[in-house]
Amino acid sequence: MRIKRIVVGPAGTTYTPVAITRAVTLAQTHDAEVTGVTVLDARRVRGLAWMAPPSRKDVDANRDRRVAITDDRLTRSIHDFEAVCQAEQVKYRVVQESGDAFTKLIELARYHDLMVFGLRSVLEYDFLCPDPQALLMRLVGAGVRPLIAVSREFRQIHHVLIAYSGTMESAKAMKRFAQLGLRPSARLKILTFGVTDDEGRQLTADAADYCQAHGYTVDRRSNPGEARHLLLAAAALWQADLIVMGNSARSVLLRHVLGDTLQDVLHRVDIPLFLAQ
Image 1 (cartoon, rainbow, N blue to C red):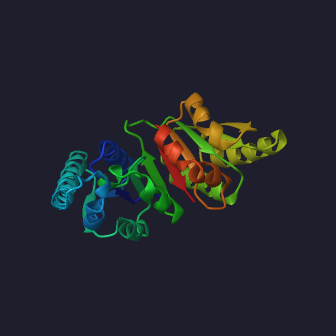
Image 2: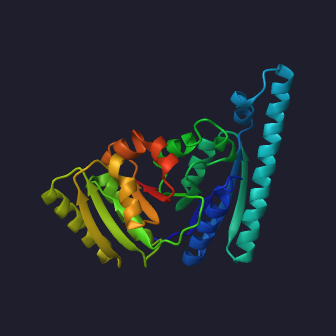
């Protein structure tokens, strides 16, 4: 598999510079084109009344200001995106849309190999909402794959933690990462949770063998505890620069990490995620 088309959301948040850098760096490595996309859902931005003052006149004015501010931030982010691509001599194009962001991003996902967004927010106005991860969760749930959710600081990818449950979904995520060759020089650690020692040894041995066939150096370990309690601690101990997970509703990892505790994980984690199905 090859990466030839990458989507990045220059969303005007604190994650935007890192998302742009990650997308452009990958494009240089793979001789790929980057699509910078913004989607302004003016109706939704105006609907953020929870931050508005009580006066109806002031509410309307505040909503209009919010749309104007959001539009300005997205425009400046696109300019920054274009400047970086031009400086690094990376092929790019810009898509500026309006309307429902989820629908627009799903359409783009069909014809791109990889999507890059922020850990806490896909779009600028989501960052202002009480639930800024909602759109990211919807994209993951819809099977958008693969997707990299970046942290606020750019990390060179040296250590990658693969959270592996042995399900077909987590195997697909691992395989997708290995096949794309995002960082062939990275050292991988395959970690299982909630299984017996014998099962864990077999699962990690088989997974390590697959990744080694793709040229990776691999460590492995089985942990009897639950992923939702131990995943982030294990990633910190490994000094992981990226965590690889599956994203199917049937996946143990989705249920315990991307389902029950996704909000908590996204609030606490400062490590980029590679999400695939």
